[in-house]
Amino acid sequence: MPAYPAAAPAARPPGSRGLAPALLVCLAAPAFFVLRVPWPGWLLLAAGLAAALLVERRGAREPEPLQPDRSEARVEVGEHPQDGAGEASLRRPSLVRDLSLIALGLLIVSGIPLKAELDNLAMLRFALALGGAVVAPYVVSRFVFRDRATGFPWRGGGRWSAFQWTWLVVVLVLGWLVLPFYFITSGVYQNWPVVDTPELIARLFVGVGAVGIWDELFFICTCFALLRRHFPDWQANLLQAVVFVSFLWELGYQAWGPLLTIPFALLQGLIFMRTRSLAYVVTVHLLFDAVVFAVLVHAHNPGVLGGLFLVSP
Image (tube, rainbow, N blue to C red; front, side, top):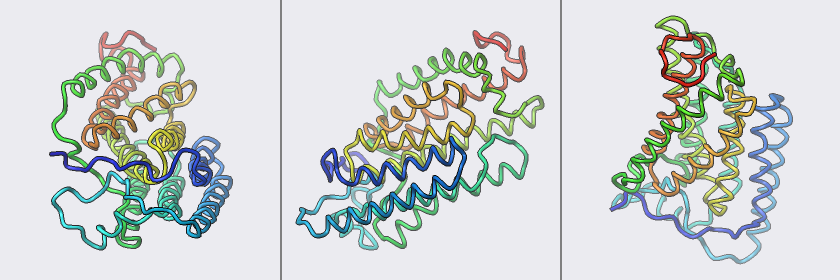
């Protein structure tokens, strides 16, 4: 039996009035992470939340049947709901609350520079900010709003299928073919620090993997899960991809990187919808990042990995 129930029908039809506020909130991410100018991001967040409040107040005056909570972070089958979770699952999800959780995470992440660095202070800064961006929305949702809107469904829908195992192999092959060409011919590998000692290589390995796991915790299990409570899956996926790709841009995936990161973000959302498994999307991401790590080592230390890749600096 799957660990999590199948998603309920969409709470609002395509073209919902709530889409504009959600888009404003998500567009704060390019302001923070692409333009790197905070005040437009602050204005977009404020405008999005204000618009969501107006939409919610107008909706409260209109009769509308109650909709089930669409979050994938629901209580597991067989558990007894706590803290009003059972009642929350039959309430209309609050657009203002859910967008405020996304805004909270964005504000926390935007508080630090995202330039890849490997010294102790930089790694501590990343750990605190990125960790806070996941933990804070979860804590507020569970203990302040008491609606369990976010969560981390590790087990998902059961055992992995043959197709899922095959996709893992495909990810490795695609990464091996595409990533060296992207990083080396565009020169974006220089956005990451030189790693020419065993200690720096180890730090890079830890940093790349940790950020990859965080990506799925925040962009998929937080942003995407919150957006799915209000919009059809395809709209929620496009919105989360705006945030996901913007973060990756500042992290270093620049030049023509969005041609890779946009499909990757959308595919991760689609995989999560189909598998309901955090473990699987994290595995996909870590395999991809393992190739990223190897390419960065190769680019900064030509010849150290022999002829592993077809492209060399």
